[in-house]
Image (tube, rainbow, N blue to C red):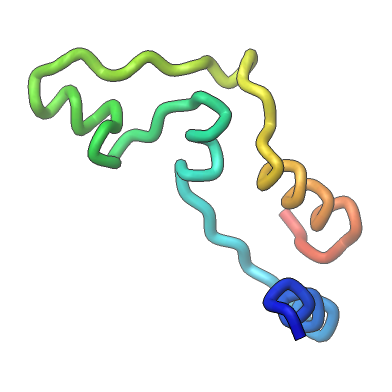
Length: 79
């Protein structure tokens, strides 16, 4: 079976599911990360101007964001 089908099977047969994410799911939406090599805190520590970032109110959700919402809406993940 494909990796995605293995994941589907695990989700369907689990009692609980924990999803850990990081800034990486938002960087493709134009939101800067903080601790990465080009992150805001990294830049500040180096004494350089942090990279420009979209604010959360104008950034569009990524496919990963939408997939997580779908898991919550379908009761596979609780908040």
